[in-house]
Every structure is written in structure tokens, then in C-alpha cells.
Image 1 (cartoon, one colour):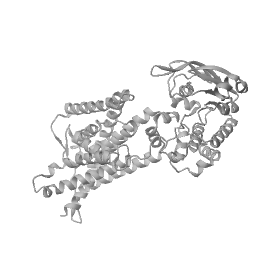
Image 2 (cartoon, one colour; image 1 turned 60 degrees about the vertical axis):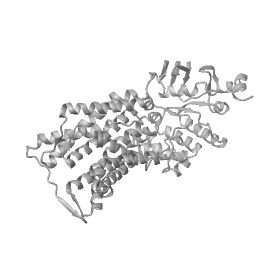
Image 3 (cartoon, helix red, strand yellow; image 1 turned 30 degrees about the horizontal axis):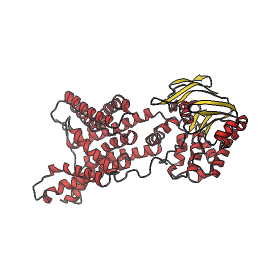
Image 4 (tube, rainbow over the protein chains, first blue to last red; image 1 turned 90 degrees about the horizontal axis):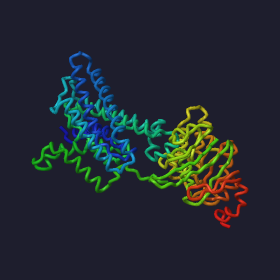
Length: 307
Length: 233
């Protein structure tokens, strides 16, 4: 088996999930300058909602595709409601406050969502009922499953759709205008509060898709899973250049590949001292290197706002 | 068309506008002149909804619009060309114009792009370029063209000549004249008092947050006080 190719494939699948979560961080940062630390936990809620829906429907005899669609729909709905509520209740009142206040609020919201989820779902791991039997596909020395292919294709479709939406739709243009100058966007007739709320809708919905993917991919959910996933997705957003949508996609994919390659080779490199369970080190090494060497990220803004 | 009574506007405790009154009638060209820091820009920001007045009343076409946010006001036909132009630097020229037409859903929008490009051929050549790459004068053209895309009835212009070379200033003022000729009512804030008074029919003079003089533009141009303070004589 070709470890290199295998880890590239695994990394791209994992990275596409990171990329979807990273979009939520980067879009909110772009428009509000706020790092929404609760975003990872919204993804976690999506995962647990999806698990519950699958558990409820697993005995019903419905085809797996229908069960997954229902789980995804429910997860998106719940996450959109939570995302918009958090923006309205926790962040909007602090819009003109010093930057530290909303940041600390975001951490507070994150903890609130985690422990609310622990109340609803408990603190134990929840596993996915038997739903799919992924078939293996061999490809030039690497093996992957059809599930991995579907995850990657769906993530790619979501990303392409989002890029098109932001570039070409009326609301997408208003989002970019609001990001650059909310006052002037207001003068054009843009209700910037609605655009900001809509950004949370988009970020939460896309994060929910990612959450369901995690459940399908790993078959597990846990009230604390949003923490590490969120940190890594945030790292991906910083790697790509926080605030930059295409950057978040690139950063997510890159981080997934870096992490998978590192996990694949870490045993050999460290002479067997470190195992692949140390893979998380690499995401944060990447974060530190980016922050030190290139804080604006790979695709960070270079044209200044002030013309 | 626009009646302002006892308008007060402040920034964090400092009153920048201290109870002013002014009127703009339908189809009129009115200017508000005064030194730097007199409160002219603050007045326009309050009239366009960027700042909330702390006291006073603004009526527009017999409707009380005091304190309405900017995105509501533009729908009722008030557009501001802000000080410093405020183009979206990372949007193309075409996208900037599209933002100007954000509130419109009617099919005439397409024709209005052409009108904008006819008015400013320089913008037509560069329509796919980012607005941040334009020169100051071109950005001012874009800011005016963008404001016109909303088909305003009342256009508020804040220092359109600021930072521009004399030739460009002349060009911008010619355009403003052409816009006014189409029937758009104008309230122009300018530091270049001579140009503003020559263009407009009436003027108000503002000093430290208050209106100290209001008269026909011709009379203001002959007024020894104005000549001394604002026309450099």
C-alpha cells in the first residue's frame, strides 16, 4: 500500500470537512472582525442532532439516503436557529464594544452550547447505528471508500456554490460591500443587520453539513467534539488568510493533507516514539508557523480598505 | 422638500451641530459652506441616516424622517455622496454601480448603467477594474454615478472637490450641474465656497455648529463677511 497516496486521499477528505467549518469562521470574521469561537460547537450540535435523527429513523426501513437527508435537514435547521440567536443575543449588543468583549463572549457562548449539549445528550460518546456499508475502491496503491468520495464531492459542491453565490448574487455582493464598509453599504440601502444575520445563517448551515459528515465518517459524536474540530478549522481559516473565503477552502484542504501525511509518517520519523495519535500537534504547529511567518495567511487581503 | 428644524447632532458628548434649521425646496440647488469642523459633514450624516440626531426634526416631503436609518432613507429618495468618496475598493466599478442600484428591482436599471457610463466614459473603460485602483477624481465620479443609480430625488454631496486637481474639480462640478439639470434636487457641502455659490441658487453659512447666514447665492457672493472669511479677500 502506498502510504503517501493513501494519506493524500484521506487528507483531502478530512480537509474538505475542515474547509466547510473554516468557512463559518472566516465569513463571520470578514464581516464583523469577530472570531466566533462558538462555531465549532454549532458543528457539534449538528453532529448530535444528526445522530439522534438517525437513531430515531434507523428502525423505520427508510433508505439510508433518505435518513441522511433528514438528519442533514434537521441539523441545518437547528444550527441556523442557534447561529442566528447567538448573533442576535450575544454579539449584536456588543457590535460597538472593544474587540475583547465579543471575543470573551464567544468563548462563553461556546461553553454554554457545550454544556447545554451535555444536558441534552449526556457526556458519553454516541455512536452511529448501522446505516451504511461503505464499499472500498482501490486506486493506484491507495484505498478509499465511496463514502469518502461522496463527502469530498458534496463539500466541493457546497464550496463552489458558495463562491458563486458571493461573487455573483445580489446578496453576495451586499455581503462583500458590508464587509468593506458597513456605513456606506447602509447608504446603498443594505440593511446591514440582516446581511450579518444572513452570514450566520450561511456559516451555520455549512457548518451543519460538515457536522453530519463527521458523524458519517467517524461514526461518533460527543458534546466536546466541537472544541478540537473548531480549533483546527480556525487554524485552517488562519492558514488561508482569515476573512478570505477561498483562503478558508484552500487552508482546510491543506491542513487536512498536512495532518494526514504527518500522521502517516510520524511513527517512522520519530523512530516509533510517537504514534499517529499525536497528529493534532501538526495542526497547531501550522498555526504557530503561520502566525509567526505570515499572519495574513496564504490568501490574505493585500489591497487596503482605504482607497 | 426637505425641512430641518433645530437639528442637534453629537458625537459621544460633543455637540457638533447645535440646533440648525434649513430648507431645500423641490428642484433647488442649495449649498452649505463653512470652515473645516463647522459641522457640515455631521449635518449631512444626520440627514442621510448615518448619525442619529440628538434633538430636532427632519421632514422630507411632509414626512417625519428624523432618526431613520440610512437604508430606509435611500428608499425614500435621499442619496449621499460621502466625504472621501467611500467607494468599495475591492469591488469592481460595475459592482459599485450595482450596489448603488441595490434597492431597485425595476427593469430600467440596465439603462441607468449606460447613463452612468455616458456621463463618465472613464468609468466605462474600466468597468471590470477594482475601484481601489482608480485615481481620486475617478473615484469621485464613481461615487456620484453610484449615488445616481438609486434614482435619488434629493442628492446630498459632501465635499466633492476635496483633494482633487483643479481640472478635475471643474469636471466634477460640470457633472453636478448636468445632474441638477435633470431635475435632481441638490444639497451641496463645500469648502470651496466660490465654486459652490456660483453653482447653487441659495446658500447657508455654518460656523461652529450653527448657521450664521442664509441668503441667495449671489448675495452671499457679494457679502463682505463671506468674501473675507471664505473667498479669501
